[in-house]
Length: 303
Image 1 (cartoon, rainbow, N blue to C red):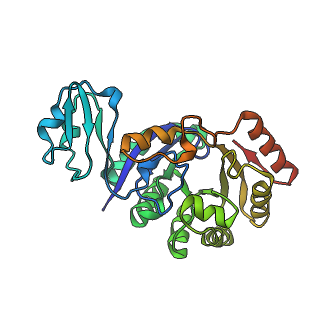
Image 2 (cartoon, rainbow, N blue to C red):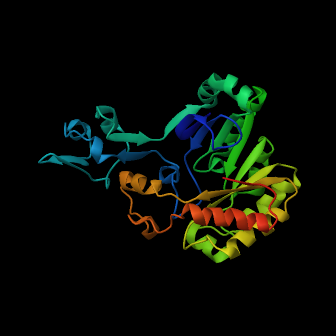
Image 3 (cartoon, one colour):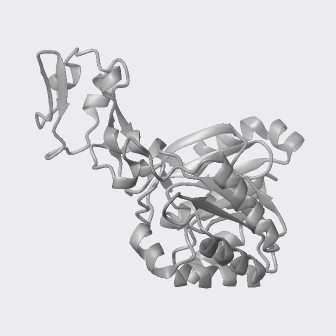
């Protein structure tokens, strides 16, 4: 039993309470236009190319079976058309300019990394966080990993978009001490346009998780000119008030870090992630949003 992860980060402090180890799983049913981890969306291994790290050694050219790498006059280009993701190029690259994104790991291998920091979890109230991508995209592996952490006495958080079959969602929720529920938007048509999926099943699953007694924190990303407005904030407050086990709302400001990753993956950059970054809210706008939620009666506002 293995899962496909693209990163395991230790000493995280923004993915749940305390100091945590966050495991980032590949695969996500959403295609958020603002995604800051676009390398997480595909359920398959991918290829990063970072031009600034390339020294023009042509090691990748020599090993690529499809001729996808070329260095002409010191300029390295990558043609991904026929790439079979053998990753020979990544192994041959001495600087990491070419690297694979995604590796198969077992539950035991992940837990070996997680338990190294048990002393910090115990001191800070931290633990393991499953993120992505979307853990629901790898449900069996996610369930086994959460169960292994619980059996080891380690606190578990599940960061999820909540889009999936009801039993699958509840199965992972019941193995988690806390759910970090990514509420992308509260306006249905805009949610579908910006994420590619409908809002209603996500809200239905959130209510089912709450009815099962699972504690949640709503995590809401705000984008200037998209959803940073009074109507969306009122929608967040309405959702919060319908929940009996929600511990609060965390407001997250959009940032454009996903732009460089899209370029490294060889994908087009959405209009909102243009160099001027029109979606990035100011500190003043975020402060206003937090204050407005407090006015609307939201019990806890973090972030």
